[in-house]
Image (cartoon, rainbow, N blue to C red; front, side, top):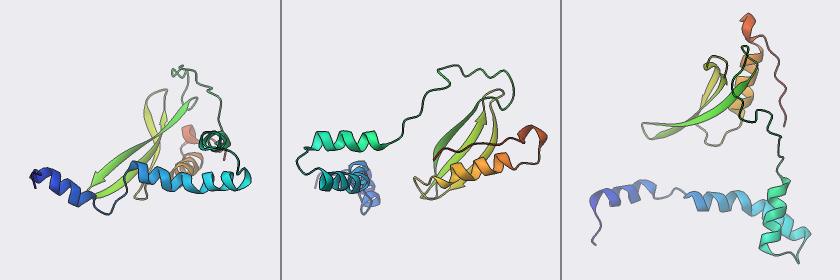
Length: 140
């Protein structure tokens, strides 16, 4: 068969899982079909532009100035993918850019789960520590 062993085992491990293109197709099929049912004469490019424009865009308030002059003035969030014993986890955390301290975090084994952002925001806003007594406004 002229297939090396490592390539074969990677293929076996991937078997049954969807690649990035199949996942994108799954996510975009519904919005594109809804847009197509409303505008049957539009082509793919116009429909794709409509679907992209439906997403909310937020202004860049930081504009590259990451130097906070006080604690909790500028908080950033990030997500890291961790794989442990074949299970993928998403570690989502809030970072205070003043001292690069992680002020809240959450781990989920559901890929693409948005709930950790709300969970860590709730934890940060309900923390009894006086420095963390902040109220975060979540925009949905």
